[in-house]
Length: 343
Image (tube, helix red, strand yellow):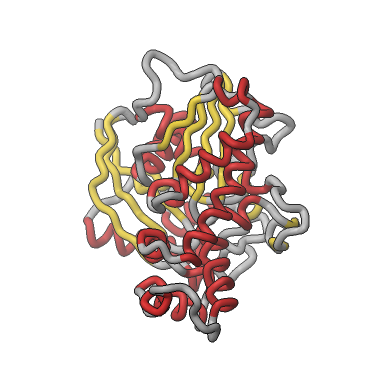
């Protein structure tokens, strides 16, 4: 029997709604997809306006597509207590605990659940990915580098949490005297150096330091008026963290010294962190995923090169690193897989 399920991928820059048809959780077909910008609704410490807007948009989406789902799944960043309650989400500006799923269920008159975005991604990879032949490796670490940095440790196919929070790689301190991240209440965490918003901000910072200086390199004048430099100029006049992947990629492809410098620095700190994972956990397999990994030329190969440089040979030689071939669709499939496990 086919069921209709709406999966909402919630992120700071964009919300993607996927309406899917499932056959008892076995066959999944994405029927419709819509996207919208949530930025102006991320203003309440308890997520009130965000939840209201999700509800309004879903109702419009269902009316337009003439569907009524059996269930709604929200895949989101943050600290979750269970499949109903969100404790906090620094990326979404939610700092107070909120019964996210229950409130949304009441507004929609449809059962809802919430799941951590990285858990959804790894569940999708484990179920539908082609990395494994007969069974998963004994130990696997999944690292997702995108708007934030998430990671999950799996031992014999089951998530390892230690005393409760193992695997929060984005909180790893890689530079104790580095930039302070208010939401994480720490200096120099990996997320400050290697996630997209912070790379964007750093690009503008370096651009500002270069402004109004006379050129000393041949060809520098052409770089000054490139598409990438124009994007930096525009961002510098507004939100420094809003430079998207396509613009950063252009800077790398143009060999712009600002782009190359910042990307190399971000890759180095991710390399430090991969080294820590390899040294402390010595997993059979590391899967690297996320738009920083797939959408930015040079970044991934530089990060792996740095990790190899820093690593102890015996640990490095026993760990395989693979790049995820899948995008956000895997997050949708993983969300449905986690929902099926709850039933």
